[in-house]
Picture 1 (cartoon, rainbow, N blue to C red):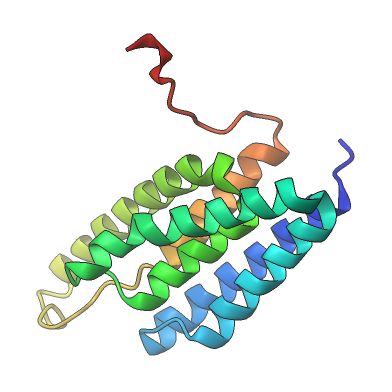
Picture 2 (picture 1 turned 135 degrees about the vertical axis):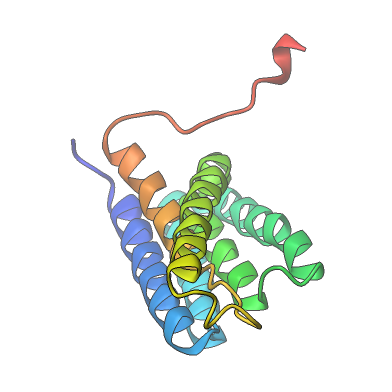
Length: 165
């Protein structure tokens, strides 16, 4: 399977940003703007140069969609602002057509992460339970990488079909 240079670059930048964001999130409990903003800018440029206005539109809609999906949990104090911006970068990298898949895969990864954290908390007898905030960067990275792997395996992204309603 031969991939366009645009796809290779977008996947590489998205993966690097996600992995860097996940590592920093685990270590420092934050995802810095120095990771998310450059990634968003580079991804918009990659898609704009690679596919012109249609590519820029797809990346821009993905960026806005990723931002909005994570903004609601952020407003309720569940996620940090870095998580919101990292998912926006994922949206810019993968585009709006992949966003539903990336969000669902991220949710599954986050659920696995929560179960593992609860098991660890139970095994450690609650020694670190108070005030602990779960870092969501690793779940976002896993969801994005899973979405890219699905594409590379030749499988379609998940979609919502409202025509049957």
